Length: 238
Image (cartoon, rainbow, N blue to C red; front, side):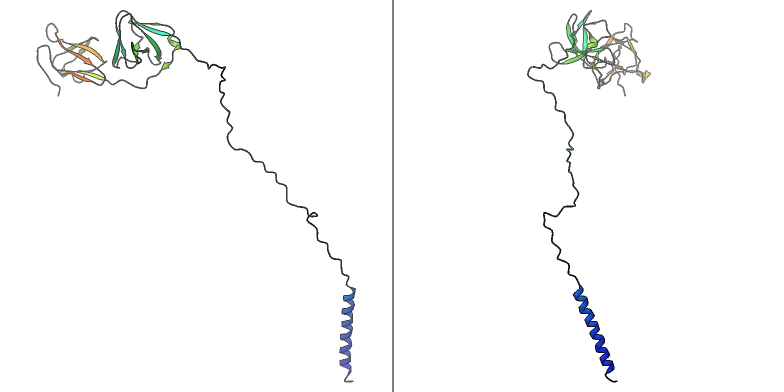
């Protein structure tokens, strides 16, 4: 009776061992998996098509005239200006307030190269010179020969510098040319006037015979005083 448990344990162990061996023998070994060769491999990466675009701006090459081509040249009409019935100033700009720089003598002629778009003045080539100046067309002392409208128009960007004549005496003065009456010093501020550049004669209106008291040559930017009256009295403006 004492040997029974031991025999039972041994019998149970033997049965378990027999089952384990039986299971191992029943396992079917699968054949080894064959390793694919590089030729059998297929890439699964997507196909990428690279298109490179030139981002530089397109430039159309300039057309160069061939040896047989002649460039087109626009010819300006020939226009001249003639001084008639006397002499006339040529000024540095298109206006009476600009300085005179030359003179057109009666019956002389100059070439016109442009005209002023704001007023009636012609730009001309100076006589016996390559310089240019301006002549008024609003005068009876000039005539135009040719089509002035066919020449380039010009808009001035420079303006004249004013010139002034001031009366410092106690007498009224008369200015020629222009027939201007210039009040005495007591008429301030009307005793000072703006004059165009040029040569003027000053006469005393308050002395019998209206004697000439002064000749003045005015240019842009100048300010000239009349200090002596027809009676010989000298005054200075404060």
